Length: 520
View 1 (cartoon, rainbow, N blue to C red):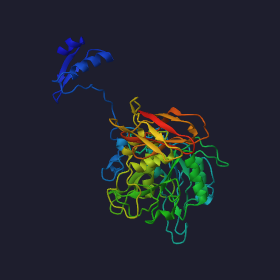
View 2: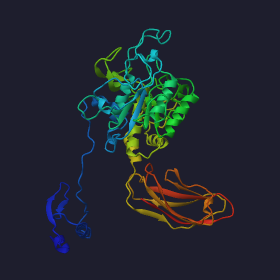
View 3: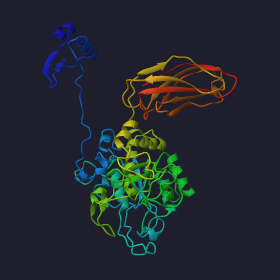
């Protein structure tokens, strides 16, 4: 009543909350100024501990209702799961297509809604076993074989439906009341068939990488479902060939992240291709205890680890996903536990899809960096090298999402002399009181006087030491740099010491960094 009298506003006591706080209503549709007036009166009262708005909250992601979700320890268990559910509050992978370069796709109702067009790249009919060579139908007819059919001493094997299992981990339909949940269930899967009876040839895989990422392959129609992420749960022995590396480099240059299985030979990944190629994310497998799986390859070329399962002591220690019950040709759909770096890889491909969906501006290199930087230490053991640690979906997605722009400015007005043709100088700004990451459109205002600005190289240095090039040296004889640059700093923590680094790279001209500012 006292506050209402002082402010002239309609202030009504509603009730006491369980904490003792008083809930107060300010009538119908008060203006911002009226609210501010009442809040100021309460803040000025020494008997009032705090005054805060009664904010409206909205639903966030809940535990999926998929019937087999409880068996997917790899997604949610605190010990060695990938912390996926907490990432779904931010993104589910919407807008991203993942190409699964594998055995193709056998129809499964828990995947069908997320399947888009792919291609069958198998040229050799002995390998394709579908009666023809390349075509637009990536259906998996089965990859079974008899004793010795794939090499002397190699025993017979039933059809694996490998590509369908991989695809389910990435993007099985979720919250549909059946089956399993996919890591990036808002994403789409493009099945690209390269593996058939006894495996698949480099030449087909190379064309598949090129086509999936939007490149041109002679005799094959243009891809209308270009993938921003490629999953390759496949491999062979030996060095990365120049031909394969060329295809991977082309895909990455087109903006596609390439995720590859480290291999299952319990050996150094340097002996397994394409996991030993450059510009890929090479994935090792961990078990339910968070240790390197006994079969998983290892070594300095491994980038990251993810749940791949281990079924030696318990089938439930494997990775459950979509499959088919047919031992040779397709039969009824089902679900099964598999183990392997083939199962670990789609965990990271799914995470890459979440990251790309959360921040579409990120390059493949930035996506890889984010996944590695935000990994957590393996809860178990690893001999030989397991990369940056265990991938953490929620932490990674939060890091790349970035903060929102608020217009808050931090500045430095301390002048710094720029020596002629000398060492770089730095000016710091301490940012505090922010939450989360910097925005994707961080404004960097620069005021430099200089008699030949073409000599100058200017970088923004983030708190973790990452440098963002604002200006390179050029043949520009004009004076001064007085402008504002925009930087996508969404992968950087907002709080900390930011620096502007300036270097004069040629003789005969000098200048001064007068001031600079960061506007969040």
